[in-house]
Image 1 (cartoon, rainbow, N blue to C red):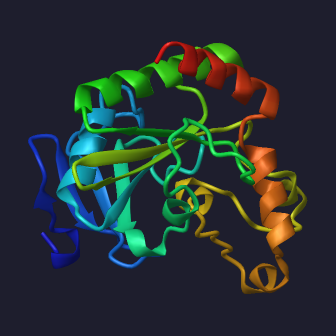
Image 2: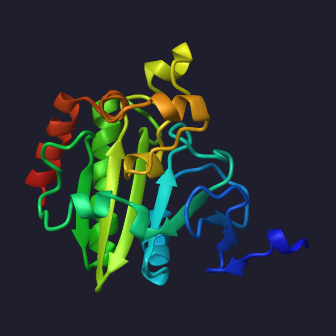
Length: 224
């Protein structure tokens, strides 16, 4: 096996690799050994385990229609936490939503792995119900582990790509890394002209509309 394809076994199902096209410091891909569709169902617990094992890292999941680079092969990505602004943006918050933020996101914290898996599963079920999705709703997830506590971010999506992508105005397609604050713009000419206001507008466009988001938040809070 070529050195660049060698990985470090994480558990019986997942292997950690250096990302072949890194955009983050210490960019890793954690892929399932056997081919299978990109789905978070029955895999979120493993995501938490990876976050606990990789001190100083963010671990991210992109849904198959929300930025996954290989939607036909279950995988996570990870990168150095120091680059992700969302951790500082949400420091000290105890609620499940982030007020006055440019994108809708659920903030789920916990020290009990099983309880956190159960709460994430419930949030995803509520999102599927709210959006009429029969399978996994459009979501991105990010997580890290610090001092015995997991901090997880669930980004419910309203759509995959913003209108500016389809018109060709800006070649941008936000996924977990972007929603955590590292906005990726592949073309230099588009990077040079994009603005903070444009990014905020794109975030609002692609995450779940306020009315649906608040309804899911109310249900999730009432069950906690």
